[in-house]
Length: 109
Image 1 (cartoon, one colour):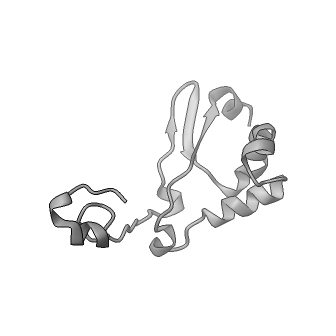
Image 2 (cartoon, one colour):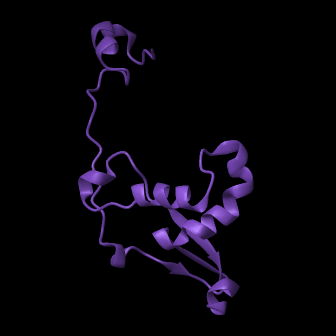
């Protein structure tokens, strides 16, 4: 256990963060349609969508053999589906995921 404030051992015992009680972490998510997409001539930074499951699997499948429990694009889709928030409370403890897309790929679509 970390003792950030040794002079108050009782609170250090109760709260690992040095005496402050745990605070709830709440996130209010904007509607998917209003999440930002940043575009330049060469790149696009945008939120991940369920449509990205196959592309993410294609890009990560080599490293996934060693670092990830996902063994197929279907499992990647299920992982992405768990990251989709339907209400603010569903986002507690989770983070936004973004993808970077090369500009030439965008022009090809």
